[in-house]
Image (tube, rainbow over all chains, first blue to last red; front, side, top):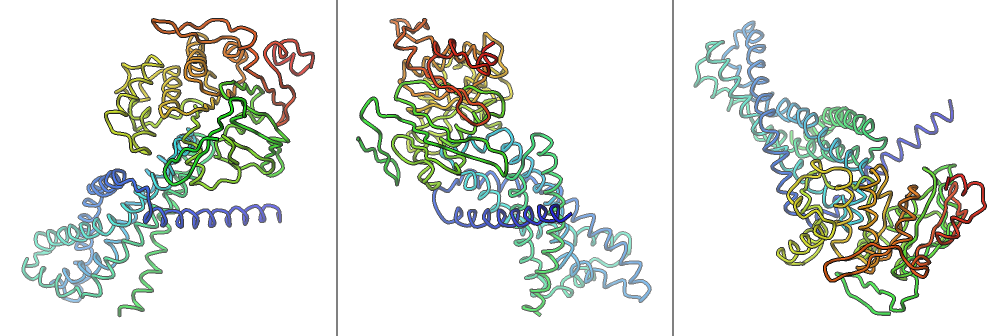
Length: 257
Length: 281
């Protein structure tokens, strides 16, 4: 029992140590040569444009279902015209960043872990090193930069289509006047809310991609190992999204409000 | 000693023909309680071949990864071209690897790149060579391994033997003076394996590349050790080598991480040791 606990603790400390080392190495890679610009552009397209469909659909239906649900509740207080205020505040401050983060964890977290994991078990990472290329600079830095900068962009898009989804339900289902909805949307938003909704995705995007890269590069055990890494990356990144969201929200509330 | 400046670091190459290009001296490595290598020592002379034999799990591939600096030994020293690999940082290792190519098990070709991009990878990504010169070099090395018409194919469209030959072309594209082959013929049918063996012989004899071949395929090991490539007006011939040439290929037998035999092909065939006999039978 003690031996098992000892092995588990050693394993956990090693994982944390390797994760921190990866981040330090990645940070250095962002600001020194060689810099693989073409790979960075490719990853911006892969992570940004490639995730657009899933983010659009998630944002739209979340906004729509939020309008449906809150419409019923607000009716009890005769406050149906305020549905726009509730949707904009919920989407921009919380649902947009978190749901976009969870979608990215599922899509790119798993993709990165599977791709890098496959490269590890087929010796392609060793081949890269043998050919004089640093795998962190070539593979991790472009993905981290793309995740860090594209997550906020995707979140803004998700927020926007969520509010549009809410507008469609508000106008055609709840029979709220369009002008009233949009006035309510603007009234419900404060500058601090916008900051919170913009800052959080940077942290979430960074966490998702670094976890995917770390888990992928630590893959062992052939194709079975790749499957295990993919699952671990999605689970770890999803939990990280919720946890990071909580801590960043707590910090921003202290700083902004 | 001649000195070549490449990038930020300086790499010196030995001038004396008999100065070893690779020195493995008392190298040991263990993972937790499992001893992988114990006091392994050997040298590789320029233009020579070192064949490392052994059963699966005997530490053969580990030696190549240590020479290339992918792993660090627990004890002992490894030198390539006179420089201590085991004491280099990652940047210095990148410089050292400019002169060392490696053919991995199964090829380890990059799935997302075409054959041409795989072969020219090092030149496209890590050199200042002009694109047209790189294209010419890629065509040249693919011609050398007889795969010119596959330049735009993806690795997934190739057979096992073709993948190994592309891997050899990739390893030789930047003209390294040392090539490491990790089970380059394992899993191939005999005819394809012979074609891969011939590529190794051609590189050694026509391009003066020093080679370390890790394998447990005895037939391929003996073929490479006992044949030579001779340049002809219209190409080359692979023919049985004379005794002096045969002596340039040395065998090392690993048994549970320890060297149990070292000698040439004739000495290996004449060995009385029961383990060697069972391995050769």
